[in-house]
Image (cartoon, rainbow, N blue to C red; front, top):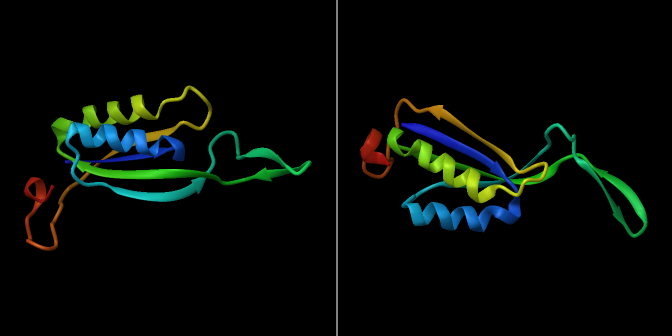
Amino acid sequence: MKLVTAVIKPHKWEDVREALEAFGVTGMTVSEVSGYGRQKGHTEVYRGAEYDIALVPKIRIEIVVDDSDTADIVGIVTKTAHTGRIGDGKVWVSPVETVVRVRTGDTDVAAL
């Protein structure tokens, strides 16, 4: 099993969610987060005054998937979240040793 974690632009969230649901993803954890990458935030103008935005709003998606679905999930997220502009986000994959469904006690693939 793998944990696929993606950080994407907020306006791409609905597109990514619909694509993942169409693939058959039945569960995920989504969080509103803030951060910055190489650009260290950005500058905006509001009522004629320029100010720095150090932390850019993002959406973090976490999905635990079977090993065989990992490449498909990563491909769906990267294709759907892509805009070609700075700050599109990142996707990373981590190994998962054990998963337990609290309600039933199911473990590993049965808990997915």
